[in-house]
Image 1: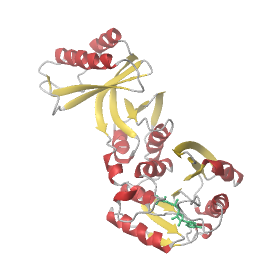
Image 2: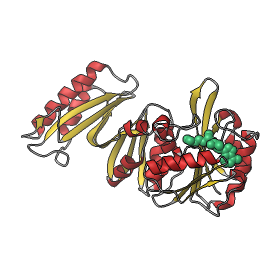
Image 3: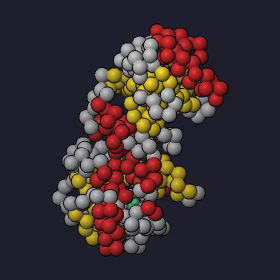
Length: 345
Ligand SMILES: C[S@@+](CC[C@H](N)C(=O)[O-])C[C@H]1O[C@@H](n2cnc3c(N)ncnc32)[C@H](O)[C@@H]1O
């Protein structure tokens, strides 16, 4: 077990931490949460867990192996760094760089620059033969100033948002205005906690955003939509990203033609950009959730988005699901989405 820290995206107050914890659970990484700070999660876990986070997460930015965790005061940091052992993280003759990030205005920009310089000097003096390389370092030391604290260590992975932007709704062969952003869809898939090889169902698949993201982390996928043009478009999008679904079916989610699935990730229609065929969203959600219950093994999850006003959490609980978590995502003045995770009891 090692002490690890993760810099999380600042785009949402709760989703990045929830996503990261769900990935660790889905991939069976034994871990202990040490601390939750603004945009930072500190845990104790095996180094292997970083691979899972890197390959799955949409809302983690940097993973690191912790060397220091102290009050954000330069003298204090220098003192602690003086006694920290670097033996396992950098060898003689290796090149390195030190990068420090400030989270939500923690500390001043001048402290960030001073820390990068001072910590670099300390590493040079502690490990003989090392050199600074700003362009192509073999090792990157990474520090985060957050909530008056400084977390510092060896960077073990970077997670870039670029691939999610490249899979944006308008970048896929089949577009519809109701499509969700790839990053939020990946986060929702992770919240449902499927493992690679398990079956993920989206009963309101639209343009297949959820299914593409689930397929890209190795899940088997199946999708339904009541409109045949959406099913055709979904298939086009899935194949474009190399995801071969188990099935894509024109079907009404309220009468699901499927015996079982490992989890469900979905965004039902709100009646604005996506048609409800005259039904109201609340009724569709209610009917679908009651239909789903016996198709999901006990303890497995549904991650569902819906307008906040629908209160899907209440609907699910009335139907006997356990509401595990809920997150609110502001979209525009007249739409705030609620993302709810249910567990079958
Ligand atoms: C909000 S969109 C899904 C968007 C999708 N998550 C994406 O990113 O492309 C909802 C979809 O549900 C479909 N739909 C509406 N009523 C349905 C029903 N009763 N059963 C199945 N699909 C339905 C609509 O055709 C629409 O494509």
